[in-house]
Image (tube, rainbow, N blue to C red; front, top):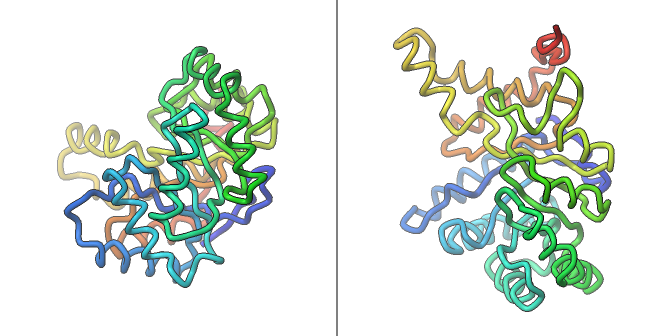
Length: 273
C-alpha cells in the first residue's frame, strides 16, 4: 500500500481508502469487520463513513472494527445538518457509534452545494460550530463532500477554511478536474492545500456496465476495475481514492494497483491535443 500526504492536514493517508457507504442494516457485522481487519493488515488506514449510511449502521460496525486499532487509523464522517444545534447533536451521536473520543475529519455532507447551501455553512453558524468542535478536541480537521463543481463549492474552496474536499472524479466524470489545462475545483482546492478524497473512484460500475454492453464477454471485470483505479491514482492531485471493498479479493487487487506505481499514466499526455 502506498501513502500520500493529505493536503494541509499533514496526515499520511493510504491512497486506497475504505468507503463505508455500502454498509447497510441487515448485513452480517462480523463479515464487514473481518474485511476491514484484512484491509488494515495490508496498510489501509483511511476510513470514510456518515450517519446516513445504513441509518447509523455503517458508523456502528466501523466503530467495532476499529476497536484497539484507533490510533493507527484516520476516521472521517459527516453531518447533514448545517445549523449549530444539529451539527453538535450529529457529532455526539457519531462519536458514540464510532466508539471514539475524536473524529479525525468532519465533513459537511453535501450534494451540489448551491450558493444558498454554502451560505448556510459559511454565514449561519455551520463553519463556526465545526471550529468550536475542533477547539473542544472533538474533531481534528474540517472538510466537505460534494457531488460536483458548483458555485457553492467554489465559494467554500475560496474561504481557505477547509482542510479536505471529498468529490466525484473518475474516467467518465472529468468535470471536477481537467487534466489538460489543470483546471477545475480539484485543482482550485489543491492550490489551497486542501486534501482531495475521491468518491466513485471506479465509476460505481457505470463504465463496467458500458464495456460489458459494448463488448460482451471480451473484458474481464477485474481488468476494468484495475484500469479505472489506476487512472485516478495517476492524477497527482488525488490523495485518497475511496473503495467499498466488499471481499478479500477487493483488498488484494486494490492493494496491487496501489503498489504498481510503474503502471501510472501520464494524464496530461493522454488528454493533450
